[in-house]
Image (cartoon, rainbow, N blue to C red; front, side, top):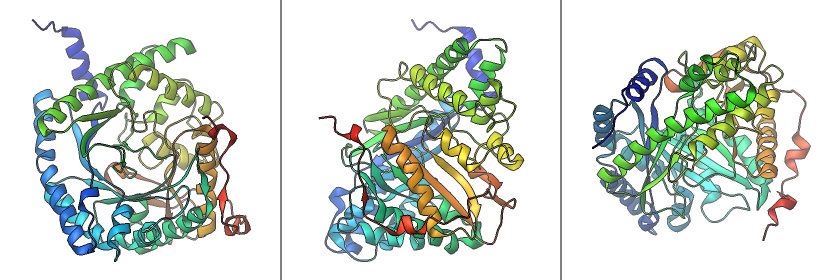
Length: 453
C-alpha cells in the first residue's frame, strides 16, 4: 500500500500555488538522419513527416499529465538533429528546412522547435557555413524555430573563423527582425561545449549520439529555493547549502516522475532530467532573488559570484540523487531579461556585463538574454562570444552567449519581448574595438587540460 505523507502533499501544493514550482519543459528529441536525401525538397518533406508522426501526441500527453498530477508543465518542445548535417547531403537553400520545421511546430502545437544548428568547434564541414549564413533569414521567416552554433570545446579549442562569422550573424538577425523587437536574436545562441541532450531553448538540439527519439525534461523552481531560505534567516553558509540541496532534490524528484510518465505514454525512452533553476520575469520566480536571500543587497554587488557558486553546486548535489539520469545544462540560469531580479539589478546599474561574465564561470550556460546597443559592431559581438567561450573551454563547462542588439536603441532604453522572454534595459558595452584580434581568424588552441588520454 502506498504510504502518503499529508505534510509532503501540502508542501508540494504550496510550492506550486505560491512559489512558482513547475516543469519548465518536456522536450522530445528526434533524429533526422534517416531523412537525408540528395534532393532538399524531398528531404524537407521527410523531416516534416517524421516530426509530426513522432510528436503528434506530445502536447496532448503533456496536458494530460499536467491535469492528473496538478503540476504545471509550461512548455512542450521538440529538438532535432543539427540541420547542417542534412544540408551536407542535400545541398540547396537551408531555409527550406527552416520552413519545414516551422510547419512541423505548428502541426504539433509545440511552442519551440530547436536544432537549426551547426557544430563547427574544429572547423566547417559540408553544409555548416551555408546553414550559419542562412540563420538571419531562417529566424526572420519563422516564429517557433530556434538556432544554435557550437564554436568551441575544451578538446578542440575555439574556431575563431566561426566566432567572427557569428558576430555578423547575430547582428544581421537582429536587424532582420528589428520590427519585432529584434526577436530573432533571442532565438539564437552560440555555444562552447554544447550538450547533446539539452531540453531548454534556444540551444536544444538532438545530438548524434542520442537515440532515434527520446524524452528529456527540464525542471524549474527558483521561487521554491528562495522560500526555503527565507525560513532560515540566521542559517550559516553550510546550512544554506544544505537547504538548497534538499530543495533541489524535491524539485528534481518531481521532474523524474513527469519524465517517466511522459516517456512511457509517448513510447520513447527517458533521456535525462535537466535540473536547472530556470527563472521567469514573474515576481517570486527569480535566481537573483535567491542570491539576495543569501544576504546580498542586490544581485551584482560584491559577493554575487560566491553566492552563485554555492547555489549552482548545491543544486547539482541535491538533484543528482533524485534522478537516474541527470543531463543537459543542470545548474542555475542567469538570463537577464527572463529574471525579475536580474532586470531590476541591470536597471539600477548594479549588474554589468563584466560582472555577468564573472558569474558565468560558476553557473550554468553564460551571457544569456542580454540586450546591447543597436549600434554594437559585429566584431564586438564576436569578441564577447570569444571571451565567454574561453571561460567554457578552460573550465571544461558549457558556456553560451545570447545577445540581442536592440536596433535603434541606446543604453538605458528598454526592449520588451513579453512572456517568458521578458524585458530589460540596453546594457553598456565597451566602445574600444577588438577588430584586429577578431580579424586574425584561425583556431585558438585547446588548453592543456584537454590532453587527458
